Amino acid sequence: MSGFGILCPVAAATQVRGMARDHLVIVAALVLLFAFAGALIVRALVAPVRRQHEITVQRRAEMERLSLAAQRTSNSVVLTNAARRITWVNDRFTSIAGFTASEAMGRSPGELL
Image (cartoon, rainbow, N blue to C red; front, side, top):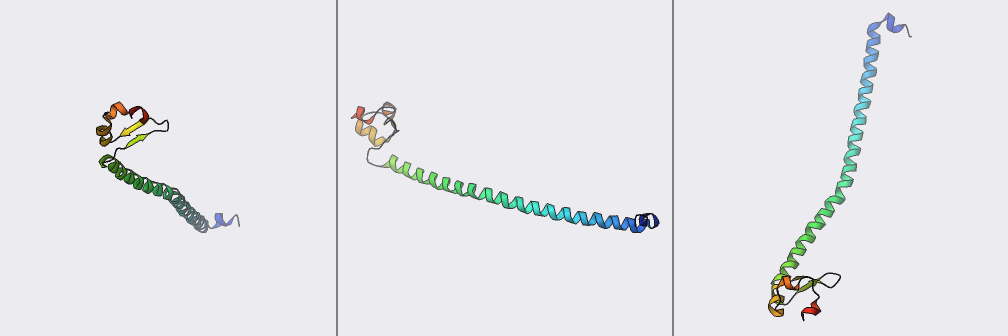
């Protein structure tokens, strides 16, 4: 059969084109397979990030509502850090305690009472 290509160059060329077409189909199928697999991987990675973003947006909105409540309440509000040092006071605290917010910052609530 090796001499077949020499005896019939048209048949040999047709056979080579058929093989090239088969290879092209295999390559195209592999490209589609990898693209699909890549899309699945990206989707699997993006979904948790998207959910975390939604949670962050919800928490930020809740924090803004709580912040407004603390600012606008008629009660005195004092926030401290883990070392029990004042990090924030509302306006009602300043009017009751007689200290400005900047004077209260970094001090313990006991020092101001």
